[in-house]
Length: 388
Image (cartoon, rainbow, N blue to C red):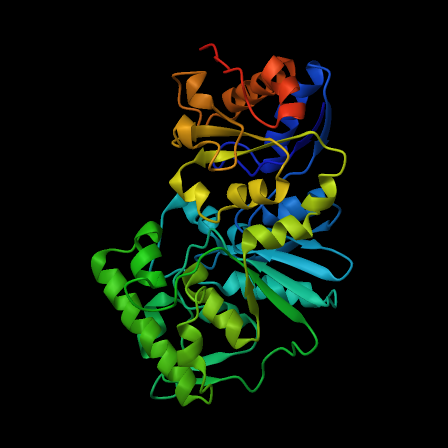
């Protein structure tokens, strides 16, 4: 049995590469031949996934979410550079993990893009998951040469708090992006503004109170008006495009630069060579921290099962909320949940998570179900995990 191990990360516990390694260790003990392909969907771990398939890691010093300098990483390919918000100025860069909904910005992302441009790429991929700010991409644009002024002409600090003060925008000294394809990889379809907009939907996850959400919504609306006043007549139309609200509005700012929006899951499966990795494979083992109803609606694992068909797909999750009678409809031959193996919380316990993944990998390789499914493409024998 030849197995492709292609998981996403277990957030808070293990990276995608670590998940793949633990599953592979278990399968190897059972005598199974494994191919590893750690995945990402445009969120946290996108740079790591690109590095795992041959991109070169490059350390950059940038501003974190609150402006404090820190080290981030970008991934350099022959013609493509991958830059992710999460490790540059995302939630993971907040000092002490304390949210600052009004005073965070995307400045570091723009600085990382500046580093990437020194490598003269033909394509710039922006992975927008895991952002900490709601600044409409103001910080990113500032790092690329835009300046933002109030009604008196004073230059403004870049963050969500100053959005209502922006009156005019000067783009006369911006970085030259001619000839560079900019791709925004995100599965967020929210517009910039409104009840489904970035402030209303994602602001609370970044620490915004109800009053903060109203403030940021008004500020983003003013931000769009300021672009219109400053010669960007299509700004209002761009703000309504699905995905403009991704990463606190970075999607909107990226489209102002000429970026195109793509499905993060689909794009990264292509970038990482998923279809090619399926060659001569009998079984796909995937996984992520949580499998639930959202998984079935365009998320990475559902896209993976569609592209892997008719190969059987086994999934492993920290927790699973899809009932067994819906596994087939979701594209899974079987789903393993760590919660079925232990009563302990594995969410932030990397050691226990790794042990259980190795054990599950061994079970997949050992069970008659795992072997028999190769010919039948379905599961006949239930697997009964033993609690530890």
